[in-house]
Image 1 (cartoon, rainbow, N blue to C red):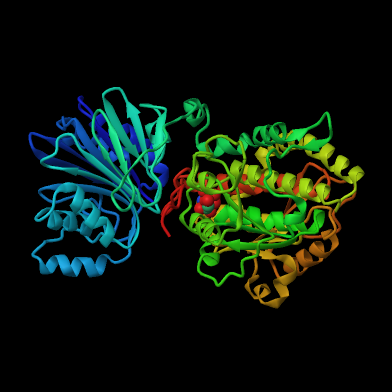
Image 2: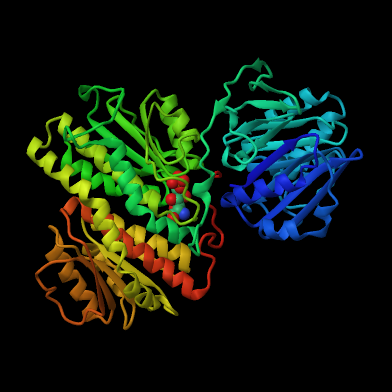
Length: 606
Ligand code: M6R
């Protein structure tokens, strides 16, 4: 992961670098650092922990360089401390890096042989010494080209040089990097968001490209060092959406924003006057598709799993689902009539991008369901379906999940109707239900007080289980993931019908088990599975939907009821109490909700 920033200006840049680093903290928050050039020297200041710590460092005040680079780190090589924090510098060169250098051990050995001394345990430091070594015999451009060629793995780099008061080099392979243009100054950043307060004029570096960034101009080069022209994009400004407002945490705000996410998605895609779903410019004819493969990581993978149930129910397509980090290394049997669909909030997840890249190289049909429409996955897919939920800042994905499953549901419905897999009357009925969904989500959000007190169930427990069947199974997985990442409680998501094939052995007196049993096709089966865990001492929290019929089971510890709608849409509503359970449980424990330990919002390394 990690976030990088570079500014080349006529004014002191350290304050602006720190401000941009705060915006990049979603990429990592183990340590932060900055290096500027002044009086022909590289000055470096680094701190363990958050950017706030770096900002408080008294040495920052005296940094008056007009050119500099900064970094927030998510540790891959070496502990998260101030020595391993970036930038890493020799006397001549200073480097910030996002990515992983896979041949760093070999390169380090070679460089030590040449007399270079290493201070950190990072892979990044080899880049510093390699450039320094190459500079002995080459000019800057040649030494950079030679260095980049020698590196295996992924990187986005920002580099400054002691003897070059008007030069930042930016380079990327795998990890994303953007250039921004300002008045008499130019910028480098891991994303456009970090640069937004300074400019909305952006160019994204392509894979393998590098740039020479001066105060007054920027030049771009391909992997071979040939000069290339790049487009400048003008981005719209949505700064306000990054504000927490009155909420204590971004996550709390993002949970509450979910009815709006649904409303926006519906407004964007549903033509209620003509009872239709508009997916404009879909590039393939129905005869060209006979299957769909859905690929993602983490929560986005759960969206894919959810979509599998809908695609199977509503269309005649063959459906498969894959975890991106598995897909990218498997021997895939690519098929021309398959739509490879990549689901990602950030659009920058390294494994998902790599899976897309493999499909593109095999000339497959690719589609992206993303939130960040300027992202690499969106830019490099044949077709993009944006989820329109606005920036998601909390590391735990909430509104993006609902946004993703909404788009995937509408895609399934649309494909099902085009292929005549579902009757028009059923399509119309489902569309009507969908239009009512935001209201139901709003009502479901109102069950707040009960969930707050129930969330104590996860205090001081050894573990917990989340069970569901059918449509509720992917939601059980998502509920368990939310609890793990926020409350640091072991949580296992399981298909309820599988319990007797092993996991039932885990059930003991008082173990919290969250059972998702909405009144759908699976209801009776799930209730039976629930009784089996109750009989073995589990403390069961049942999540179902409102109904005139009472739940026929004894000894349920607590019940939460969400609003009622058709079976397809219940997963949207069941998700909400699970997000809140995880949120309140972490809140009670005093954990950092928006930045849980060891995680980052955008996983841009393998
Ligand atoms: O940006 P992406 O949707 O591609 O991210 C994928 C996962 O890293 C992400 O969903 C992660 O699992 C979340 N932290 C879960 O809340």
